[in-house]
Image (tube, rainbow, N blue to C red; front, side, top):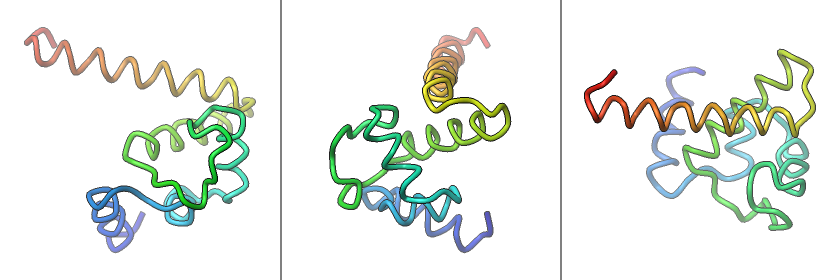
Amino acid sequence: MNQDLQRLVEVRLDDGGLSLDELCRVVSVTPDWVTERMRAGLLGGGEADATVLRFDVVALQRVRWMLRVERDFDAVPELAALVADLQHEIARLRERLRRAGLE
């Protein structure tokens, strides 16, 4: 990601999140890719209209993880979502260890 786009993402995340179009631009996916996973309950939002949603840093990271797993391992979206859940949990546990001075 170039520096201008990186700066835009940081500003947007601080201002309440990325729009669907901004998220798609940052991660290089189509809006259909995102809305399909939202309808399946893999990104949150369920049946919500993705065009009015804002995506926070957690959603951005989840989309990146899912996309990577789907592309690198030719995984189905459900498996990619499971891997994203596990990666999020590992990151959370590592942070707890770091705070406790054990890592």
